[in-house]
Length: 101
Image 1 (cartoon, rainbow, N blue to C red):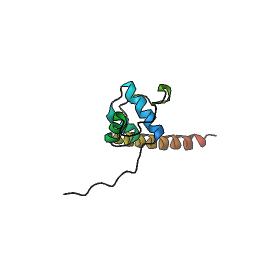
Image 2 (image 1 turned 135 degrees about the vertical axis):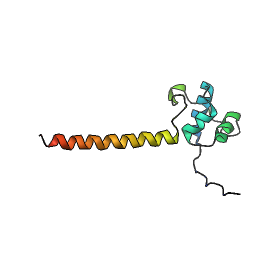
Image 3 (image 1 turned 120 degrees about the vertical axis):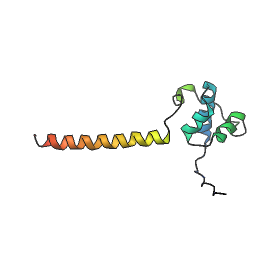
Image 4 (image 1 turned 135 degrees about the horizontal axis):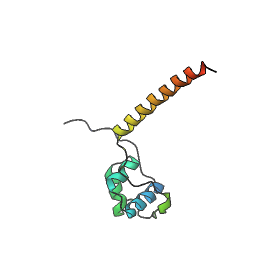
């Protein structure tokens, strides 16, 4: 049997739990909420059922992120690569323009 992956070390705080509760109230999917915070969906379920952070009140709806789904890690890496390429193209263009100044 393979080794288990090392824990991420990411944990929800009381402030996070308040946001989780507001997102749940809005109707967000637990999977999307977990992706936003980078935690296992089980942590969101624990907040939803009151197993964790039962004493925390829901955050105001004005203080929560937009509804998901959110970009995947793969999509984020592709966006980052595109931004790096765009930055390099801008730097080349700036260097060419500098010759005319």
